[in-house]
Image 1 (cartoon, one colour):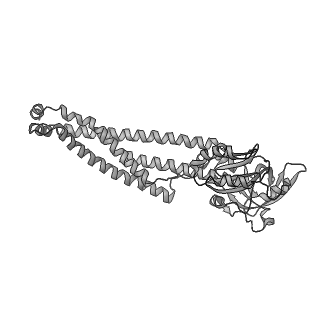
Image 2 (tube, one colour):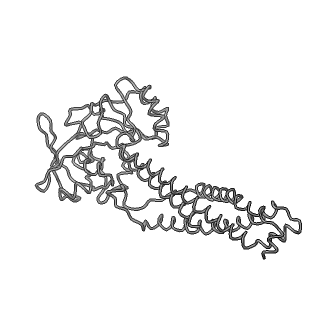
Image 3 (tube, helix red, strand yellow):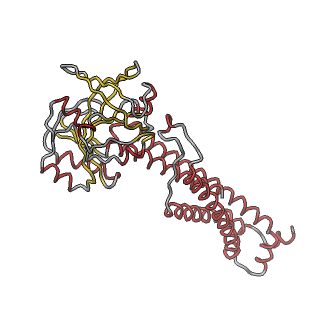
Length: 374
């Protein structure tokens, strides 16, 4: 029971973590970033636009969205304090659904009026705390260029990504501001975020695009932007495998012990059955059937406990985490019916196969000695 419950919760927490953390990275950066020549996520990049042939090449790879953006380093000034940041510019076609989900306060940028949009900004809760900003406050942003430029923005929303590197660095604004500051044409962008229909296909499609993109263009997977996050997720896979193996070993040892005790307690019965002509294999099956019954009860109780805790956490988010360390402030859980069925079937099969070993003790019991000893 405890072994199965622990395995269900281990798989649920692992999948929940991976889904939530990957969803955050995909929501903020996309699956792939299309760039021109050298590219760095926190620096200003060479502008370009997608031609028809490039768009057609991307469209053949199950692309869900292609969103232009631009970045520009700046210095924020508010409440007598300054903070080095990166302004990430987006346009009215940008899908702000993810930004809405991570908002702590306020709303996303409204692009109904381009002039108003150019004066609006989203800041992280970390930056807002350091500069004592709240929704509705205004601040200055200084852009280091020749000549020196500055722009005034209004805080329309405060977000919390939960990833320290992002929360410390990024302010979200309109790409129109960056285009004006850099004297870009309205169709130019610093890069394009590409979202695929399946995140598992990113490495494969990234490799294909490397050979299909025009000279000077490249595609950077989101995994390469913050590799430490994905390396941490890979380590979680190893931890889950270790937990599953340990739980299976514990469950099997418990069942072997239970079967050995049953055999020893029924030594006289085994001797009598053998004296009456019952074959050893048939006697073994009797004990294995009984062991299967006990395993079935354990699986039923284990599913009840494991799935009960799973649905409790899913609905209430009762168990919390330190967001600074885990990128999320609660324990995320996610498990499918297939996962549960495979765990149940795997544990049942492994237990029964291993139990053939102690059941071999039945063949070593002598009918005469067993009856005499009893």
